[in-house]
Length: 395
Image (cartoon, rainbow, N blue to C red):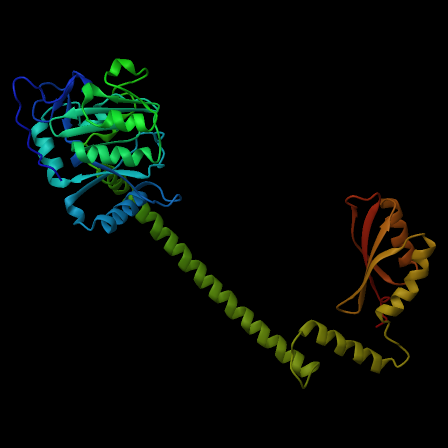
């Protein structure tokens, strides 16, 4: 980084010319609280970072700091990094560029500036407008403002090379080379078919400090937002502590109650399996208590009443089918379900027809449960679902 000391002033040349505005002074020449203290732009670099889109706030700053450290390889305590938020809507974390300078330089500038409105790199004090580049001489070399959202400071040779590189990416409509500050720039502009003038008045729309440049004030502590957040969090520490304790107690009580229920459930399951093993399934694995007990009960009824023949789902459909056909209804789905029941899905004209066919099937002696009747989507009529079981007392 550059020397933070104020350069020597000669009587016939001020630190910064009229292009920077009457309130812009060198960092050591500030006379009032409304002055803008300018520092060498070459010492305050603006770098692009490849930051993730989904990260916000303090986490975004931490990611940017780690990425910057990996890139430059310097001691993090020696680097002052802050978001370059010009052009980013207020209240949003859409910034992807950072200002980087030496921590020691920033400390020296703050001490030398005293009371002032802001401390800015010299290129941000130049007037700016979209599609207009402004180049001006400074006591430290060249300051370049490449539109409202970009700028840099460098020596004359490096500035010309940097501008040549920028012209490969984007071309302005006008380049203002104030008082021909950068030799060779006119030839470069002519080679790219760009208008090049030497006075600010020849370019329309230029505005000084009208693009939120003061948000880049180097007096501001880049860690201030984190300190403010920490203070806000400290105010909430006791409520959060009490809330966390209450949540922990509630979770412990819930865990104890869940463990008690699981213990009771395991005991009931063991008791049920013992009863099933004693009375219904003396041998073999017990996989599904309900279905296995139902089959055991059916077998027991069949043995107690040899004349009773189990009614299969096929036989139930054979009994209900003619009745359904008589009602003028065609089944859409026929499915045998667990427990020797039969499920029918019918398409009927309306709800009255659904009730009529249900009553007609029930008249055959079968047990009929009307599961649901709904209006069909995309078709006229009603879709009804019924479940058939063997008559009461018959297996």
